[in-house]
Length: 287
Ligand SMILES: [Zn+2]
Image (cartoon, rainbow, N blue to C red; front, side, top):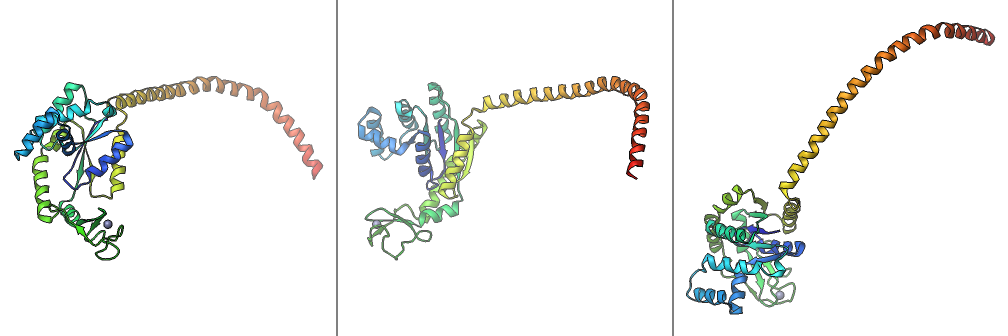
């Protein structure tokens, strides 16, 4: 099963991808991690990427695609992958499709994690962590029990990511929407796009994702004809049964009526006489 998870930074893609990874035995492909790993490994692609990044330039799509192609060829990717944070543009989506098509691999799901921008800005800009142990907090949603003291380790030093401020988050969201907006219709046209509410509690999002993935674990193309094939014979059988039910009673009723008419004509008179005889003395005896 191969999945792309779309969503702006802070939508919880990484958290959910990690859960899907464990549950379905997939590998999570984060392009940032792959780039760092490639650079660290000193591979040919890694060296190329390193030179580009050191020059302060964005790594070209072809390099990222090559990294993904290399990664999904490895044995641990047999069960499938989750692409998180890629593709971001329609160009990247097309390049990804071409690379996968060459390998005979298809994307099973493209899942959009929908967010409320204002809520997301609040969620991200309010977060901070303990400088000592890394425990996560939030200005309003998750304050330490004692103001200014870490619940976990008692440290009084906290840190905030420089880019976790309202202005930067708003800009990131704008950029995401501007770039990614065309990808949604691209995947929607392929019938692969599904959405989940990324603002829901983390566990609810996991449940929603599971429903999508489990629901479509049975191939759609096979499920539909099977459903039709089953429905048709049932209708035919029902039709035949109805036809038989209509014919049989008619055929039976006619002789049955004749027999009933004939038999009672003979049988009723003596039976009724005998009954009258037997009843009358019985009543008389009782009275
Ligand atoms: Zn701490």
